[in-house]
Image 1: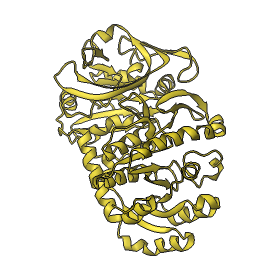
Image 2 (image 1 turned 90 degrees about the horizontal axis):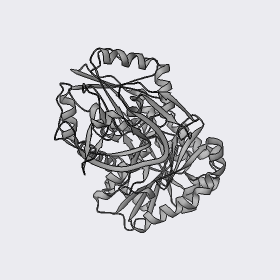
Image 3 (image 1 turned 60 degrees about the horizontal axis):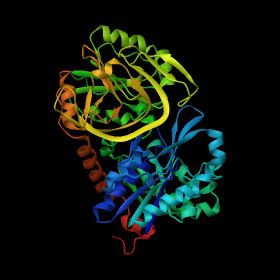
Image 4 (image 1 turned 90 degrees about the vertical axis):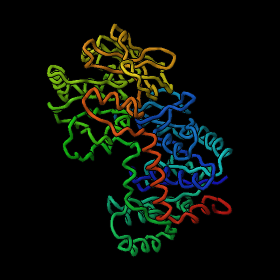
Length: 489
């Protein structure tokens, strides 16, 4: 079956969005399409229906293909826990914690796993669209590579290279990649795409011609700045540093930007609400005194980020917020922080240790090696408002506050906790704000109205809009031919 790999001249050039858009474009043409990323590095992850863990971008791309996500779509996932170490997920399951040097030396051992997952997807699809990681021009990482050219050559998948013109030097990036790549790697590249262009495309006609002249690669098109991409979940936390505050709104909700923040796409529905001023608070800034709700987000390293939170003085800000009558919501690791104590006796998320929590809920948590990965659904305990989400965490939480659950799961089990006065709450469930009924009920507690749009519907509409833009911007018949679709759809 056909396959095409989209690689980039660097991280954050838009590979994930372009693959998602192309997935939807070809799915709209009636093809069975599957996304694939051999190796991903992200703390934004998703749970598959089978209870596995994959990168959030591949779950989005599966939605674009209108298929259920599977662990084969992202067989190797690295979830950073420190600057030099990461949790390794192989085919959806935790496979230990690796230091960066050790992983670099041994990553080639995972190539067979990657190829097996790719073949499994390819057997059931008309087209597999593959996303690379970082850049193939990082030649210092080429030995044992499974993410870019190492995979492409082993699987025999042609490559299209993407350059990001918004960051500048796109000619140098593409021509430079051509210059430094090994000749056999270079031969895998059939053409290039330009992404994130703003303005009159004719102004870069000569630039595209120069890239063709210097590389010999086919010019396959240039995508405009895709405004609809703002409605898609971002994978990299780097985008949080670029948040632009909007006009003041009636109700303010903030979340501190923890050093290992995870699954921050939980808050995408809040960003879209017209009655809500939502923002991330960066390190070095205090939590604003006029916030109505402070949300403690998920984290890949709960104890380390609890120490980080205290180092920023956010624990003092949070205590003052509570004294003023403000509300607090903790999600996953943020829920654990709200308790009286957190212990990691076996060093599951870092060095073994324990620390007092923030003391806002009467619970305690012990981190364990067993990881909970499951889709969940239910209703808010205080309202007949349904939600759908997922759990993805290590740790067992106990305490009297669990007797006042925030959520009631299908089947009747309680989940999470609420303080006696109802102003402090938390739960392990990600995706609480996605469903319109649950989000409307939670915003009503703050005195805010909701737009009533399900987040899945918002994302689905954005995928269709992006696919339509790419249809106009790219040479789709040429891309189909390079992928091996005969005849092109």
